Length: 238
Image (cartoon, rainbow, N blue to C red; front, side):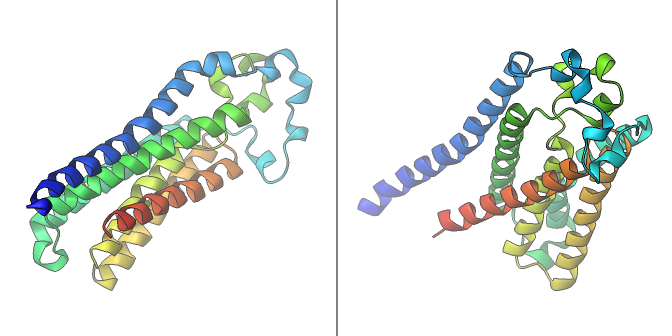
């Protein structure tokens, strides 16, 4: 009888914890995004001498001057594709290879919760770091007077596109690991995910929107936050 009473309570508490792990980070990120115009110091606009190419260390200095609008568009495509694949590829596997992977809608629902938690956490960490670091984008160093007065141009570190692509696809890869995917499938999906993250970073650099270190850190942190969420999920199952 006691077990019958406690089971709904555990389910409710689990739902509440999962919901808060999405709500709190997302709220922090949105608040910081809203406050960005008041938090950012447009230093390059009023002191352009400190924002010159010679002040940028190698290898980031190689990016200053790059400006490829098509690469910018491509980065949005690969970022969005990462999210779409991470959400809907498990569904496709349910319909077409359910016997091979043993994925159910219930398991997909649990995975979707961890996906949203990882994305929300990544969003929050990204905005916190951006608000603290306030690194100008590469094109600001090419023309500080014309671009240095816009607060939106001080969010170079670290790349939100790459970190989202990394956290989304890494969460999917960890899900594949939990589902004991066949080794061939697991390695193939992991490799394709890595290529998509790499392309997102490459396009962000070629577009002149991010430095090389921005995309490297974005990828590493995205994977790290996905792993943290994965470990938290495993701990909750104990």
